[in-house]
Length: 196
Length: 196
Ligand SMILES: [Ca+2]
Image (cartoon, rainbow over all chains, first blue to last red; front, top):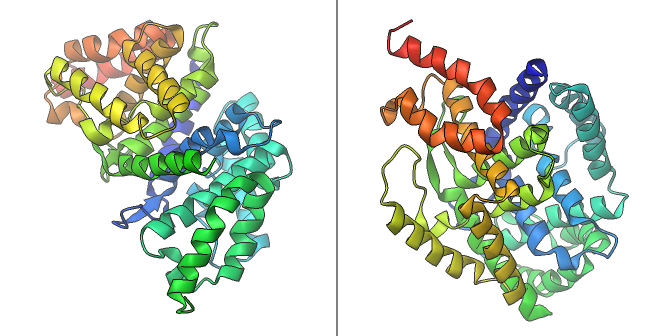
């Protein structure tokens, strides 16, 4: 039992490093960039609060577990900003290696079940994963609207790009959230681009 | 439906402030103090990974929801360091007011269910709450052992005090974790106090 616990606690100490992975997005206050650990907490809170936006087949507790684990690979692979233009194949390769190393610190049964859940999230095909992805995409636009544009300015994002990169996954997993967001985005970009 | 969603998103934006509540404890690396949002994520990961340390009557998914919400009151009430000596009655009063205001931003049904879950955690009487408390107490000693003493030096903590403030709740909710921790604590304090 001690070897099992030693491995588990070793993983938990290594996971602490997610608090030092910085994302492109900022706090609502704009004060600083957020890290991937506090971001993970925040989107889990989104999933719980916004659970009534999920389809009836979604199991919110599975979604919470998925979101708890979803960014851990960034400890090795880093965060790929959604409006950056990373090499997607290269990124997928790095993240798969990260999942093997990091979840591999755990006892075999947990390594396997955590990696499987992370792969389900990444594939974004099941109802749970579609909702988890929608929630993950929804948080940043809400923050950007709040702090005057945030990452949209930095990456020179247009409303068309937002529709592809954010609108598509949100409509797939939580369409009501896109209905809420779209008029606010439209008004924001019209103002920013001087067409209002 | 829009009024409901407006209220929910208003709460989620306010909750972002938990990322700016600093705790006494530091990252494993020692680099900086951790904030209550990233701490919440980290102890949820502890609860999932260490679930086999819970009694058979514990529902881990309920524990995860509890831990997701457990520190939100700190946005108004601040963090009370476990080795500080706060006025416990005053702190409980401030936290109850914080729970009313913060969860009160949500639609009525959610305000009620979130506050009830937070009160269950605080009361620490149910199996789920006892396990959640044990996990919440377990993380800091592991970090302190890793970074050379951390908050124990700052607050001049003795092993006897640790037994009362940390040992008691861990033994109540996850005794196997105390069995793992105690020899390490004993060795650390013997070295620190020069009795080894
Ligand atoms: Ca991410």
